[in-house]
Image 1: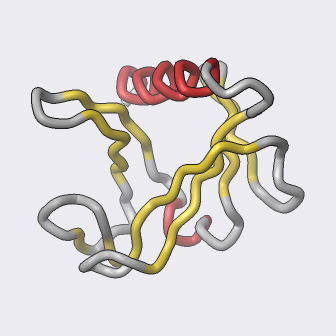
Image 2: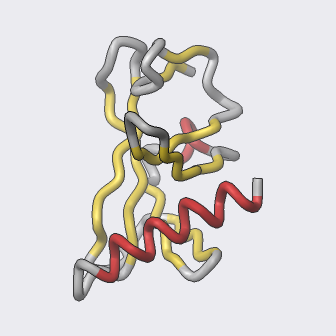
Length: 106
């Protein structure tokens, strides 16, 4: 999983370089999709007060406290194919996901 985490970190670094003043990304979940929840990623101007910070491989990811229960133990990857480029998540808490991978349930 280290190689996967490194690809995600490299992609986040690239995105942040194009956004001066942003210090990291914020990971959360939102109730939507055909299976219950989907992941959200937003730029962060500063560390939100109650967020947990994961600083690895030279990037800062802030985790929304409301999302912690749903994503504890999750690893993030960056995958590129001929048809798409996207962050993907391997979530050990997910009991199921939709066919397109956009949403999950716990």
